[in-house]
Length: 533
Image (cartoon, rainbow, N blue to C red; front, side):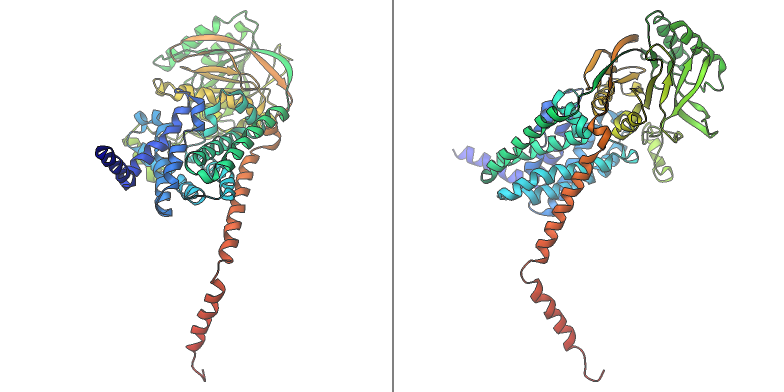
């Protein structure tokens, strides 16, 4: 008994130690990463935040809660982006520490809402306030200059049909709200006996909301099928050898009654406007398979406006050569394709594989119209690599008339990591949000296709494959609520936090004693005035 008591005392002492708490918070913040591919335990997202929130609610002070929010955010950022460590080395700690700061206010907010024995009213408010706070963090870090929306909590639900249905209503943002709300309710159930009824009611409300979305969300109409081929050359050294292998795989597609052939990002290492020989070889392939090819250039050259530099461009090539349809990548990968504030942060190139030269940005999104057997006018919306993580880009393409979203990607630098699976999974979310099938074509895998509701079509091409594959892609008519309304959950989150701020402001102004202190201060000032002045 004494031994057990000593062990309990040791545990309590260590759990109260700032060092042990800091370590625990760092680990707890990293846990949600296991809900994402390649670990891919989607259900884990609904409990992954509970240990972190349990620690935050018991922080001794608000300042300590802020610090533990920051430390947990660092753990989350490092875990979700662990595949970047071989490229950025120690600089990943700088980035993780900077972005982890975003969770500092959230840590403070968790303590405010859940500390001690929260009332039923405070528990109900927490079910809305804490998810709203998390969503604002996801919004801020979604700016491409801050790393972009990689690892959004809702993205962990990429293969869960009810969550994909929810995404069609409010995008990945609404799914993130649901996940954090469930974690909040479970935290209360496990720690606060006086508010368990409120927590159960909140969780039931989440279930009702998902059911309502499932029933209410508009159903899309079937619009036939398109036959799309993906060409994945695999891990091959040298741009010329990669081009040759892509050419060989494309020839094997002849006679398969296709609508489009897609090559991955950087599949052509030269500017086709200057290398007519390469453009002619691709045009010959187009004649052989009977449809246009969507290829991707990554090379020094000039864009359609005459600007010079290195552009990443999706280019459509038909039987007669370049069609004039071209899209230049707009959102570049920080440190991978450019270095923000290079004068100050250029040293990152000396400790990792950061971009030695900045790529140039495109200026507008493009919808390409294809001639061919599918309705004669198949309209595709191209995205390049990192851009498939941005819900607003795919939404805009669909609003501009795109019937099929095509993301060209290359994760060859990160072959033996979680990155290829995570990247491919994003296409499922973009498809579900917009109600448009999405093709994710890569150089080295994972290449995959998803239908209008985010469902997987056919068999993906894994990272070990060098192959081509044809997919029968279901098309759809109609629009989703997300396409019509946009990211309305973000505005709702801002409204919730604004209401909380207003409520706390009114409470502060009505605090007893404020009216008595103000006149006393005035009297002191008046007494110092001398007569006759």
